[in-house]
Figure 1 (tube, rainbow, N blue to C red):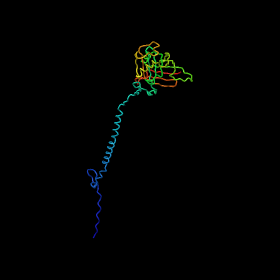
Figure 2: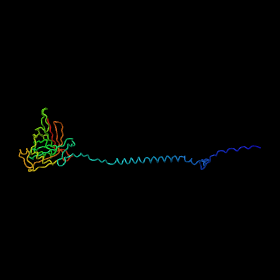
Figure 3: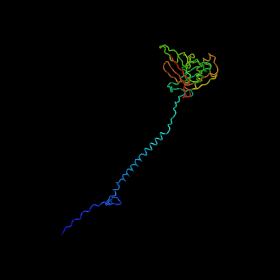
Figure 4: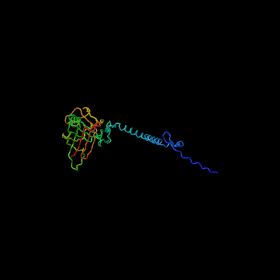
Length: 273
């Protein structure tokens, strides 16, 4: 009996043309996941990443916009104002060694006298203490107050230096050459407080700062007015003076105004040359 030949193996499927294109016979048997690895899903992934980057930039853009808005706002500056000077309390309270802007000690200074007579300067540690210095200046009270109303008045008092063996405090010098705004006007004389001076100081002990007149019935005449025949109302000006000590041969007293923002109206310099 003749043996049969085994059938030949099937030939591979030849490509066929479908609608002018090529397709494989096993195209229908390709797994469905093959289409997920085509270009379209990759582009979709890139598109998603692109949208994700856009979303991540939104907070940065928002921050930049907020910052630009704040930069565009105007800068508001507050005016600089000097602090108020410590003032003497009402009723003639003590200074308690307070220091002001210049660093000097505060003292009470009083200018008093009749308008047509020489003015007196009294310096006190406090309004209720006895004067540590009384000077009789070589300028009329009315003239000095008038000049102070026009502007700053500088009074320079000079005296000669003593021998080194003679030790005396600057405020204890008996006589001074007086200059007012650079012009020599005479001499200032130191004197001990009289009963009339003490009486005037007592009348003003309740006044911390201010100016006015004392009627003739409320006081007796000071030594300067009695010798020159002055009469009528006694004019006074009381203020806080700042004492600045430069050395043993120089001291300065600045009269401070009630308005702390303005400068002193009167400066008195004591100098030994």
